[in-house]
Length: 303
Image 1 (tube, rainbow, N blue to C red):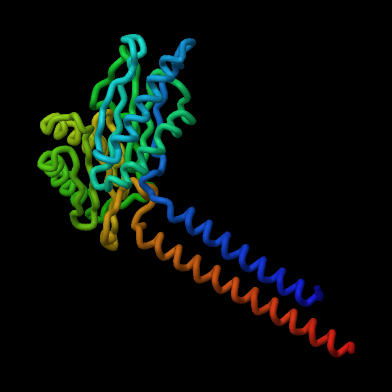
Image 2 (image 1 turned 180 degrees about the vertical axis):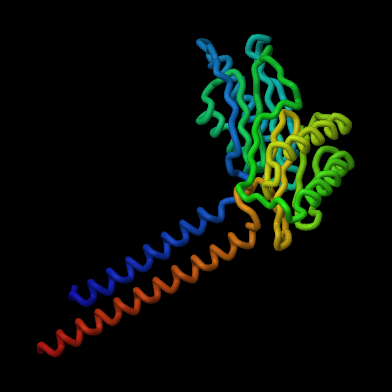
């Protein structure tokens, strides 16, 4: 094989490798935001499981939850052969997820729970689109109003009329989550809000839980442009878009750390990446061809 042919083949291999790498990076950046980890809560005590009964009960519970996630957005079950090995577990998906997205989210939770918490006697893993909770029989119960996690955006928008818009949006959402029987999302004057209660919480208790979470958001996050408050039995999230809420489904949990970002910015970033990557690949191909052409010209000139 001639040197010029070898160089041509090498150029093609490099370009194909660059294209494959770009596709892999694009696929990675396109992963759904509802599977982002929000927080984890792991009991300190591990299972004492010499007989393996706890492990069997835990595996059975995981399997049941994942199976049911193709049919419903909330499911609670109890597994175990004896009262000492009984485990109660549940999952819940965000109310605006499709059944396929719910399954995709929930199916990640058993592995994540094992990696993050091991075989603890109780665990909770919260993703942006779903969460899993399990505990053994007799585990100490906590109040449904107890705050488990909070996050507030870094941008402060005090003095822009934001607080009034946010508080009005909060009021609309508190009423909506009751009429929506546990889930509600809406937009009010550039403020996107979302609230959800655990699936077995009644409308009245749900309203009280959401009200508590909203009050905590006002105190804990102040004038932050975004925030999320997770209580034991409900959660709320909000995000202020000064240039208007982008069209299509959105979630405060997808980008709570910055103000004004939207799903369209992610699409733009991917488009730019494709253009830049394609331009670089084309430029590299032209350089390779020119190099081979000059090499062949030199070879013939030597003859």
